[in-house]
Each structure stands twice: as structure tokens, then as C-alpha cells.
Image 1: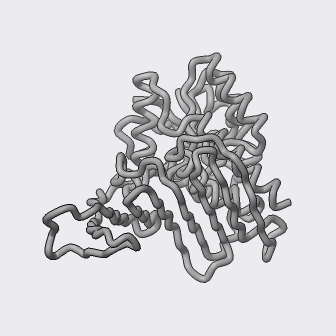
Image 2: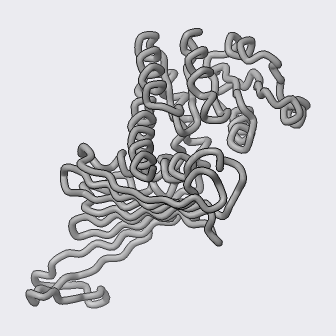
Length: 318
């Protein structure tokens, strides 16, 4: 069993705390949070460490779920004490901080994973191998207002989930970025739209809002002869494929003609989506990386790339 501790028991930290306690791979040693009132809520069920350094020294890995500005200092302390780290997204506040953590982890042969949990969403994993060389990507991530997280731009709060997904499927360097955003309730932008063009011709359009009337987390991929839609919130996916009709065709299929008179047959499918818990899958994947000394599915480098693009979008807005 891998001895684990959690620092920061807010919304996400409390979820990690409970699931780690039930894990087959991790042995939960305890948790730390600077908010003593919040800590009392969990201290009856889990061991509370008043000093974070004592928790760090007692475990093999720390799950860092505190506020983003504290990620760097906590992770650096963990890595310097030869502890593996799981860092909730975004990895750090600045790319310079992320670079330093990557270097320390590399020098100490330590595993670091970033909590871009949507990569483990069953609606997304059900399409593994289906998404390839997309030409256009449309991302909508809309949320009702919640005071939690509004101390940072909606880009780092919400859009960064989709940024990571897009960067994981587009194998190309970024050519240009344009963006705009509006501060409605918070001091940082609450609604933002960004357009990212890649050198291979792919275009990704991102929209993120935390002042919407309803929640939505949908991403659509358009590629040669296929349209793929993922609903991360409802955990559903659909695939529409188009092929040229040569001789025989399915009489029950939808047939259309293009401007050249060519017949096209449309196939529609809903891939089977397993009822898995994305955070549990995230934990299991991280444990596998530690036990077998493998690069995590979402490495510190991946976290750095997502943060780098997010910061570029924020800079364009400013």
C-alpha cells in the first residue's frame, strides 16, 4: 500500500480524502488544512496533522488540494523530501513555478500527476482511439455562479479542463491565440471565449462561463468523415460517421447527396459508457505510475502546457 496524505480539504480535497480512505492502492495516513474549523469536520473520521511537514514526512505521496497559490510551495517541499505529488489543477500559478517543480521531480526520480480529471471521465475514455487529427473543436463549459473558485479567472477555474483535453488530442504546436472576456460578478473574467489555431490547421474554440443559468460541459470534435460529441456532465458520447456509398448500402441508413451528386451514408452510434468514478480511476492510474515508475497519464509537463496556454489566453484578454 502507498501511504498517502491530503493537504487541503475543501470541496475537491474532501472527495479525495474519502476516496483514498476506500482505495485498494493507497493507505490514507491523514490530512492537513490551515482552516482549523474546516478540519474539525473531518477530524473525527480521519487523522488530522496540525503541521503539514509532519504529514509530509509520514507518507509516500501527498495529494495537494489547497488553493492554487499554495500549490508551488507545498509541492516543492514534498518533492524536496522525496515524496510523490498529486496536484489539483491548475498545477501552479505561474509557468516558472511549474518548470521548477518539473525539474525537481525529474532530478529526484519522483512521480507527479496533475488533477485534470476529465481525462478519466468515462464519456471521454469510451472514445479512446476514435478521436484523431480533428480539424475543428468546439468546447462549452458553463456553470451556475459559485463563490468557490472565483478568486481566479474563469480560464483557470473552468476552461483549463477543456484546454488539457484539446492539447491531449491535437498533436501540433500552437500558431495563434485570440480571446476576450468580461468581468460580471468577480474581479477576474467570469465569461470568456478563446480561439486557438494550431500549426497543423486545427482550430479550437473555447467558451467558459460561471454565470450561466444552467450547467453544461460539452465538447464537439469535427474530423475527416466524422463528428464526435462528448457530454462530460451527463457522461454521454455520440459518434456520427460518414462514408461514400459505392454499390450497396444499408436501406435503413440515412443517405444524403453532396453538391457533386455523391451519395454519402451516415452512421450514428452511442458508445457504451462504463459507470466508473473518474476520481477513483485517477487515483488508480496514479498508483500504477508510482508502483511501476511510469509516466502518468497527466504528467507535470501536461499541467505546465495547459497552464501555459491558459495564461496566454488570460494575457490576450487583459
